Length: 274
Length: 322
Image (cartoon, rainbow over all chains, first blue to last red; front, side):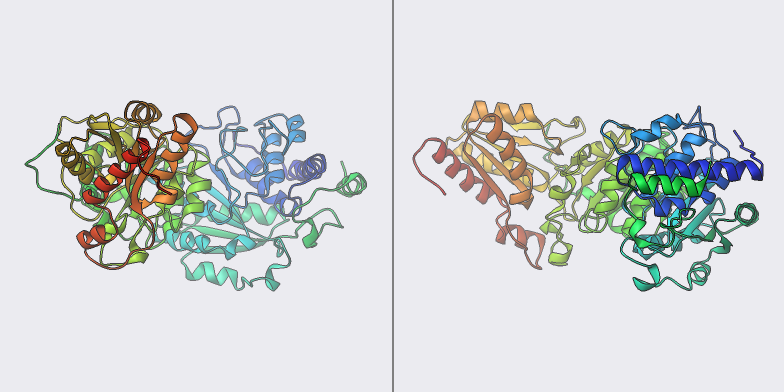
């Protein structure tokens, strides 16, 4: 399927995904809402406008691949996959529970649509390179989209892979950095500064585009640009707000890895709206 | 079965030529290399299949990740480097990206053990069985000679799922001829006997055979098993050895405490307890030639003979040993 939601429909989809994130982490009593809420527009743009895939045939060889390298962002991942039709939205309430297909961090061969097992940071970009090289060897024209956290860019392997992708001229690769500025313990800039991040990627041979990561129009334009860039991979640095859409979670390191209680659930859902 | 006239060869020499042969046979093999392809011999593949030979530079973590992406897209992904670097520098990548999804990645680690020699202890992989055998679903193989290595690579390429194959730098005697057939998960009985069983892996299979011959001269009938598949180990062969010979001695170029000895002891203790002995590495070694190190650190036929005798003595209740 090539999903082609109108911009109005996309906005409505982001609202539903945000509600899923809050309801899943509330039901589970754990999980990672902050870094999920920051990536809602990124996944919405990809799954409902940019990527080609078949929910009823998850392993279709020519599908575009979305690789979630920041594996803790399962709430936004599962919420988006359910909205895209890979499995019923009702199943989201089983997140993190015994016997659920929706594991705390992504695991392949559980729920359909999951591309890579993840949960230890820094591994997705390398994996994406392997997928891109296979596409070239097999003369397939699928594209690979890899979502990285900004804290994840502190991992050495991310830069091993960042060095590798331009060496192989992988213009079928598009990385996205969810630049929400907050990591597990505290703010990124007070933990290990990444800036100037675009210049670092440029120096490694990437085409970089910096966008407002909650602006669907800017994201769609950047994904479109990335498709046109030849001979090198593109990184989209998406400036986002951790916890976006829920005032008490926004830019607050406390909401990296815990679920809301009953009262917080009601407040969050009221802010997100129906 | 055994080849007496073949000159010694290093097990690492099997890799490159075998990969070329398999690709020529139509297998969709891609090789990922982290700047040690000349040493592991994987680089020979590049001469025949330049597009299917991926160099990542000195970046073992990325090597594993790229291999996983290739495997997930349907390729048979082989990656290779030294045993100290894989699993040493990429254990988490192997755990999360290879073992947990059960991807079709074939890791071939060369230059394992102390027989690497003069490069010294940073280059001596004596912990890799412990790491790799800790991962559920990963087949861990340590072939005894170059013939068995070729066959192990063949089986790995044609069997879906993760494999770790350990090879060595130094030349070792060729035990098998081309009629031999490696069987995944099965130990190969090279000598029969009823007094004790030596379970040997890798380059210790040669000394185990020598030890058995010398013990036979002294009237001790020693069974010798080549347990090339270290994990999952051959439970029925181990059980039969315990029941039929009543004493088991392991021989490995790895730390005893966390290697073949540990795994076989745990299984024997749980199922058919018998006295056990172990020949292997107990500490970090040093620089020296392979022969000097194997001698000094007790990885010899002499050491196996002594260990067999003392284990049989415990079986007979003649001597206590702490």
